[in-house]
Amino acid sequence: QQQVKQSPQSLIVQKGGISIINCAYENTAFDYFPWYQQFPGKGPALLIAIRPDVSEKKEGRFTISFNKSAKQFSLHIMDSQPGDSATYFCAASRTYSNTGKLIFGQGTTLQVKP
Amino acid sequence: GAVVSQHPSWVICKSGTSVKIECRSLDFQATTMFWYRQFPKQSLMLMATSNEGSKATYEQGVEKDKFLINHASLTLSTLTVTSAHPEDSSFYICSARDRVFYNEQFFGPGTRLTVL
Image (cartoon, rainbow over all chains, first blue to last red; front, side, top):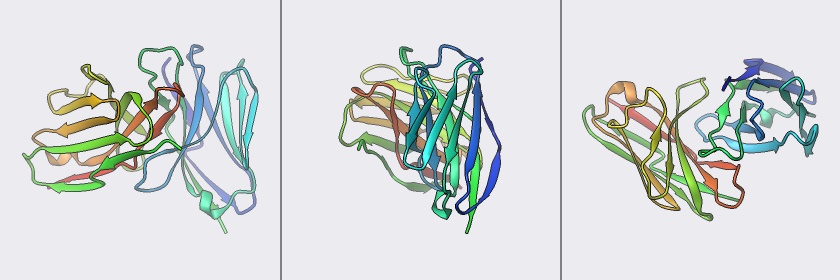
């Protein structure tokens, strides 16, 4: 019930295309859903995050879509660029838990071809 | 933005020695710091959670006597890998939870540990 399942494991997109990564969760107590971007040899960096009270959040080329009833959320990268090539992790946590632990998905390696 | 630093960025040590990794929140106070381990092409695995001034809480399967965590202040946590062995070689990443933006975790750049 603590798991967050992420798909696909890897993704190849042409420059200018849309990259879509999906995540699903089980625990309905989760109320914070961030996406992280990680380049090789670096720590993850927060890209964008959403709470269940909204169905969509957009920041620049990055959009999170959230479906509370289906317990799913996804990251859309519009106009994908070679510089977006990285590993993306979705995560989930509970705001009022003692620890604020993030439960991570398995990660998606994105390659954007020029 | 919130910045978390780690030191060293990489370390090579001999089997049996101990290695200390520092994690600092540079421009904010962290109520909680987290330590993760990441193997190549895998997700982040949470090792332990530490709150300033109290003992760390370790995840199941993580040896607390091997991975010593000290959270001495609101801006500094250390991870000491004691009696390191080649199987401890990994990428270690810390994160810090902002006292104000409660949910957000800011990650350090990671430390690559290689044990020979």
